[in-house]
Amino acid sequence: MKYSIKDLESLSGIKAHTIRIWEKRYNLFDPQRSDTNIRSYTENDLKKLLNIAQLNNNGIKISRIASMSVNSVEQEVLKLNENTADVETAIKRMVVAVVDVNEVEYERVLSDILMDYDFEVVVTNYLFPFLNRIGVLWQTDSITPAQEHFISNIIRTKLIVATDKLPIPSVYKPQSFLLFLREGELHEIGLLYGNYLLRKLGFKTVYLGQSVPLKDLISIQKQYEANYLVTSLINSNSGETVDEYLQHLTKSFPAIQIIALGNLLNESVFKSPELKKHLSYTDFRKFLLEI
Image (cartoon, rainbow, N blue to C red):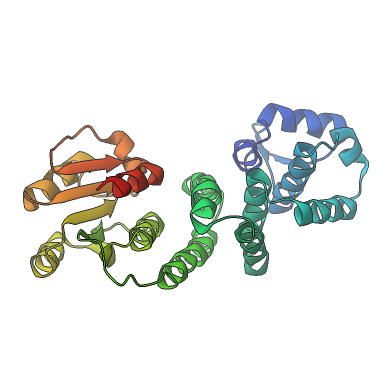
């Protein structure tokens, strides 16, 4: 796998200009160059930069880091990770785990964070920013689909297990929710987290998951009669635009409140009294506390 200098910037938080300076002044990297002098970096270069960035972000001067052996840098990072679970450090550790396809290390990072924070904090402050970073790399072919699936499946499992562990209320709140993704939509981590929030707050849910055809959704709703329909819009590779889909959805369920989540809402201008849009899960949670 090859990485551009922009990929390294996105993953490490170190500006491309700074990487070039470190490369020239301290000989930290020896990138391959194309015929047009475009740099490309290896997975080892990426891991090295992430380690360097962790040490530099924690007050160790780059001149000192440059004088250290690769093994010494790794040992310093291990010591640092024993004593901190700050957001940027944790995200960098998770990125390295994805590059290495190292489930043990990824689990270790999550365990460290979960010892200090509530599951909701871990998801919103750590996992979602991490997934955004991974998503950019996946879209630019800087990581393979297999690497993206590897980490998505781990997080998906964590959300399902966390939801299953929630206590069952003796009495559910009166409102009920039906959660689904539109046909062709497979990115369900956000929707799984929405289901977790609903269950934690004492609402009854039916979770349909990925790629639900509209006719099946209509059939289930007739049977279940939920008060709210909840969907998440992530993938733009669909025959309909976001607004075309939302308009179609509101026409299909004219008397039901529809809640839409997901980053594709940034592209939406469609408005309807039956439609609630939430760009963040923090806003979604606030909405749930008010109903």
